[in-house]
Length: 108
Length: 121
Image 1 (tube, chains in turn purple, red):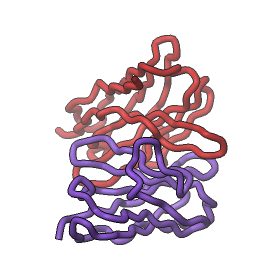
Image 2 (spheres, rainbow over the protein chains, first blue to last red):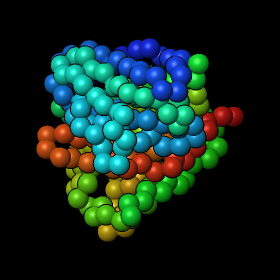
Image 3 (cartoon, chains in turn cyan, red):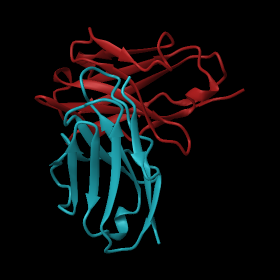
C-alpha cells in the first residue's frame, strides 16, 4: 500500500501568515493527491483535488502544487477560521486511498 | 442538495457486531462510488472500504478485511457497513463519503456527519 507522510504534524502561525504543509508519498502517484480540511467535530471538507485544482467554493488563498512523490498545500494569508487540521490523501490506481496523518494548524 | 446521513452507531462489546447505514439524497446514488472512512478519538482519518456503483467491486483496508462487509441498495439510496468481530481499535467515528470521479481524478466531495462506534465491555 502507498504510505502518505505529512509534515509538520503541527504548526504555529499568526493571522495573515503564509504557511506551507508538505505531503510525501511512498511511491510515484503522479498528481493523484487531494487535500481536506477538518474542523473539530465535523466531517472533512475537500479543498484541493488532482494536486492543484481548487474545489468550487474554496477561497483562493488555498493552493496546491506538486507531482510524483512531493506535494504542498499553501495558505497565502491565514484567516482565523483556518486554524484547524489538514489531511492529504492519495487516489492513485485502486483503493486503499490512504490519508496522511494530518497537520494541525495552531494560533501562535 | 446532496446529503449523506449515517446511522447505526453505538456501544458494542468486543467480538460483537454492528451494521452502519448511510442514507443518500440529492443525487443519483446508483451512479456513484461510495466509501467509508473512520476516525478514532483524537486520531487521523483512516480509509476503510470502497464499493463501486453496481456493488460488484469492493475493497477493504487490511485492518478490517475479513471482518467488515460493505454493501449498497441502490433502489433505497443506501450504503451499509456490516461490522463483525469488533475490537477496541475499531472504536471511531465512521463517515460515509461520495466519491466524485472527473476522469482520471477521484476524490471525496461530500461526507456525512459521522456515527460513533464504541467497542468496549
